[in-house]
Image 1: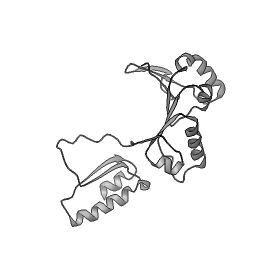
Image 2: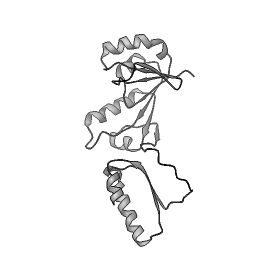
Image 3: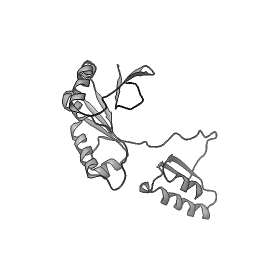
Image 4: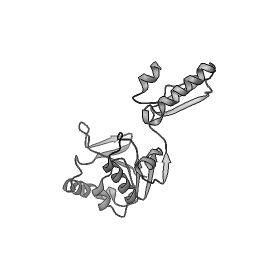
Length: 184
């Protein structure tokens, strides 16, 4: 397979680079039709007949231009609460315009009303290596945020731990509630 990665413009990074043998090409700074058309003409040969896989950012002009390409999209992230109605509308529109979609977490379908073909999991940083094999009674894996139920989970674990001191927990993830959890 020949893989070329196209990413959004990012100040301070070269327009083209090679990363572990894969060509990385940055798209125009804006989604302006004229800039996208010129960019597309330059890379038309690479894009023609390809399968496109986009993550979060969805180049509308490019999709309209590449109508016959198979298109897969992965929905990540969370923009905060309350959800912006435009973000909901945008995600639903993208889901209608692609051939296949992945949601990173069930919340995308639930909160955005965006039906995905597949649900996958992510959003946690790699934990430090554990040297010995340990069995845990409880595990929390995810974002350390109020909306994930993280605080309630940790508080519930403490209630159990107070009555059963031998129970253990493994907590893997990252978020704004990290310092609260360390102190708690």
